[in-house]
Structures are given as structure tokens and as C-alpha cells.
Image (cartoon, rainbow, N blue to C red):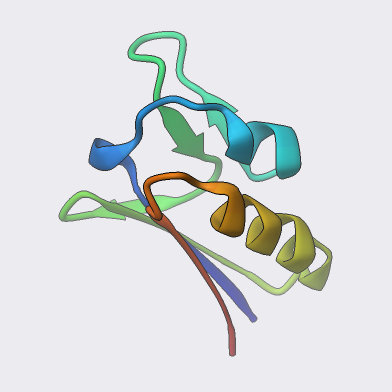
Amino acid sequence: MVIITLQRNKCIGCNYCVELAPQQFQMSKRDGKSVLLHAEEKKGFYTLKSKDYEILEPSQNASKACPVNIISVKQV
């Protein structure tokens, strides 16, 4: 399973995550911050759990590129 977590309130809207992993991330037109698609929110953390391992590499690349380090990707 792949687990992606986004700490959205700290997002600066750089758009790197969308460029590197467009199937998982999108920019909000409302506030210009990143949105983790199909995620569940809990206390400001947005989490997506998926059995699709094809999202692992693009998500890891997005995590590495994030200048504020608010994306975490785990494989369990």
C-alpha cells in the first residue's frame, strides 16, 4: 500500500507536486494551494491510501521537490 500525506496549511503554492504527480495533486482555484485528490482530512493532514503502486514514484518525486517538505510518501 502507498500512503501519501499532505500538510496543506503549510503549502506555498509552488505547483511542483502537480507538475510531477498530476494524478495525485491539483492546485485549488480558491486559495492557490495544493490539493491531494481523494484524500481524507484529519487535523490539517490530508491522507491518501492506495493499492496502486504506479503512483509511488511520481509521488516520491513530488515529495522530494516540495520546497517546504509538506508531502510524505510511505510504502507499507
